[in-house]
Length: 156
Image: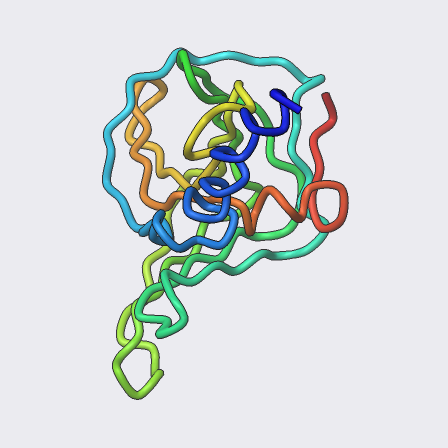
């Protein structure tokens, strides 16, 4: 019975801490974060997108990013992430309030993916400045991770 009493606070806090999203607001995916990396080659590590994947910043869709389908090859790493080069340029769009496209940018870069399952930001988009510098431009969360094994997967 004492174990049940100890679990009560956890049961009440779980919905407030993300189970229902009541306290933790949705993550803003748009970012600009410079990262130093080391070049690495490992043909065993790839990410494969079965088809293009598109993500938007919110239900209002003021910004969006498209990851092209295909094989993403490992090109760099740092302490927290692997960096996989996209088979084609990433497409980044901004939208007007009426839903029309106001700008399109194409970035040479790819997908960064966490080395740890306990990472608050498990992945996202980056563009390449150099072999030693990547810039995170989009954060991916649960919506992306939930598709693993269905629309995308790793080879390791």
